[in-house]
Every structure is written in structure tokens, then in C-alpha cells.
Length: 406
Ligand code: TTP
Ligand code: MG
Image (cartoon, rainbow, N blue to C red; front, side):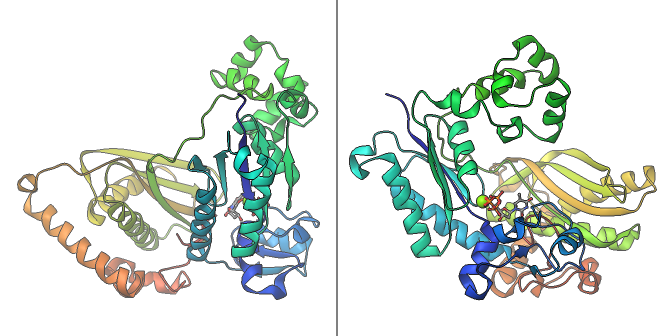
């Protein structure tokens, strides 16, 4: 029996949440990402704004030049996270085979559900209806026998769309589309393919495997299979997060070590708080820097022992930062810190040395206060100066990242 997979993705998600809350914004060019005079990029643009060429990732200043009457909204990540949770809860009512693929998109395996809803199409319509009714949000759905084709179909049907690709039609459906529409093809792969004279997904599917392998390594074979509409990947419930990171762009490029350290400390505390919330420890700390010319570096250090303390995250981050700054004289545009190689803690208490134990107790007390009164209710000395640098969001500083102030 061929599978029936639904891919569903909310339309202009961040913007739609704002429009549902404030109906005056409906039908207008709206951008979430920040004020145009602030640095940063468009996170989400309404379809009215897209008509002017606005899109995610575009600098806010460019967006405002292309569409001067667009309404710019700062946005609030906790609000979108809440909407995402409610969206996923609705989907979970329809199928237990649910795989969230981001805040606003998910795959559902609907094989065999035809008898309940009449057809997969009816099921997708019902889902869209409930999302509209309960959250006030528009969604688009693609239905096919595989994840990759379902995703291309939902994307193509936007906004407020529904597109079903019948079993057997997968290949002919994909064939005429430009290669950039295929999941897995980024800007670079697209350029490589254009250079080889390959413009459509159909042409990609007909490429000799050897040529693909030469240009894309092992992923060449995956691309060829996707391009032919073949994708055996199961709809799988989410695995636990493999890393946690926080980053921000500065209002002005900087080489000020005090500011860089303070920001690193703050971002490390945010990542650390999330790590502890998940009850995990990390073995690897990564620093990320983007310089004023947009070159980006990451530097990682593996720890001899897993940790979840703010101090250990910061100490390691700081070592990496000092090394990076001594090697590169350019000003810093963005700084980030991440923790990875996550594991459940399994040390025994008596193996802790007393300074680590003190750090852990301190973090626990701080987490408790922050949970109750907000993230900036208690601040470590080093980060105090940030109140003059970053705006407050109600629960901590507003970070300039695509993910806002998570
Ligand atoms: P998308 O689903 O890619 O975009 P969208 O929902 O705004 O628009 P549509 O699906 O109709 O094309 O991403 C979902 C949300 O993720 C988006 O509303 C905002 C956020 N996001 C960013 O913050 N930065 C980005 O670069 C992108 C692409 C999305
Ligand atoms: Mg979306």
C-alpha cells in the first residue's frame, strides 16, 4: 500500500500570529524582525509584503526601501513558541505519527486514515480548518507518498493551499520545477547545478550518478533519488535536541572586549538555563563569531567532563574568544555560544569537587528566581552593562537573531 504523507506549514507564521492578535494588520504589508532603523533581517513577511520583493533573510533597511509603507514589528519569540505548541497539539489530535520539522511545519503519516476522514484530502482540510478556527492562522498542506514530494507540494500551494500528488505522479510532478525547489538544494548546490546546465528537477534526476557524486559526494545519490520522487524516510517522532545555542548581532560592530565578554556571558547563561531546563549536560562548547565583512568562524572545545554550569560554559567560551580575537583584528558583528554533545548527567554526587557543587547550587538558585521573575531579575556583575546595549523584551534582552530572543 502506498503511503499518504501530509506536510503542513503555516503561512507567514510570525506575521500571521501578529495579525491574528491585531486584525488591523490583516491584508497589509507586514514584516516581523525589528524596526527598519535597527540592524537585523526580515524573519517573516506577509504575502502582501512579498509582492514588493520582501522575503526572509533580507536586511530590514532594504525591506523598508523596497516597501516604505510596510509595517515593521519587533516580534516576540515566546508568543510564537506558544502558537507553535498549540499548532502541534492540533496536529497530534489527527495522527500519532507526527514529526515537527520546525516551529511551523510538520509531517504526518496519514496512511490508512482515509477510512476515518473519507480521504487524505478531507483530513488535511479538517486540519487546516481547525488551525484557522482555533489559532486564526492560515496553513498550506501537501500530500504525497513521500516526505520530500509532500513538502514541495505544500510549498508550491502557498498561501492557504492544498495540493495532492497522486501515487505514481511524483516524478512528473517534480520534473518541470526549478532545482531550487527541491529540499536539500541550497544556494551553492543551485549554482553548481546551473554551472552544469541543470535547471530543472527532471534534469537533475537524469544526471549520471558519477557526475553527481563528483560534485556532491555521498549526498549526490540522495539528491538524485529525491529528484526522482523517491524518498523512503519515515515520519519519525522528534529525537532529543542535539545542541543548544544562543547568538546575537550587535547594533554596531565592536572590538570592545568588555562588551564582547559581557555578551558572551549573557548568551552562555541563556544557553545554560535551557540546558538545565532539559536536565542535560554538555561535553562540547562552541563559540561563533561573524566579523564586519560577514566571514563567520566557529571554534569548539571538548571538555574532559560534561557540565551544565554557567561558569564552565563561560570560562571555555572566553578562552575560545580570547584566542580568536588575538588572531583576527576585524570588528565583530555577531557573537554566539553553543553547547553540544549533550548527555544525561550520570556522575555520582560524591565525585563532584566542592567548587563545581557550589556552582551548581548557585545556578539552581538563579534559575529559580529567573523562572519566577524573568531572566534579567538577577544579573551577574559582568552582564550589567548590557542594559545600555540591548533592549529588554520583558524576559531578558531582545537578541537580534533570526530566532529572536529565545
Ligand atoms: P517559514 O515557514 O520558512 O516562513 P513563513 O512561515 O514566514 O512563510 P511561508 O511558510 O508562508 O513561506 O518560517 C517559519 C517562521 O520561522 C517564520 O515565520 C519566521 C521564522 N524564520 C526566521 O526567523 N528567519 C528565517 O530566515 C526564516 C526563513 C524563518
Ligand atoms: Mg511557514
